[in-house]
Length: 187
View (tube, helix red, strand yellow):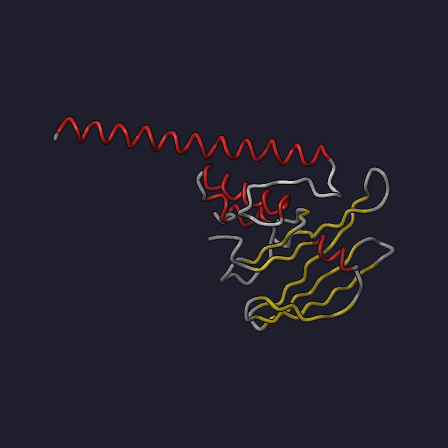
């Protein structure tokens, strides 16, 4: 099973939207889930109740102090009790839980099933989209707001991905040549 196919809640998205007590409707695919967030600001914790005809689940939020001030919010996984930033509900399941819980049940992200050269191709497209605004353009430029160190890191990662793909192509070529030589000897 894949974690990507289901629904997920990222605590950082909720925090950016503003942690406020209230109710709302969340729509994913063809499903509509009622969500009610109750925050206890003074104690730095809260609860999110998710209701759907198939399930009713309450998830706890907690905040941990940061070293230089402020707080970092986390979900508490209802199944393991561990802190996590993303809760997943894979397709066909009725409960939300953290990645650690789903990993124990042999579920993973789609990219974990891909060969290294396929993951490298995805990485190249992602970096191209960041730097050129399109996945297919070969001309890269540093965005005006980006630091040179970040741009250099992206370029180094591109080089690494391209070397992975070139190594794979070289292995394919060697394999093809061996097969052709074997066929030539037989024929």
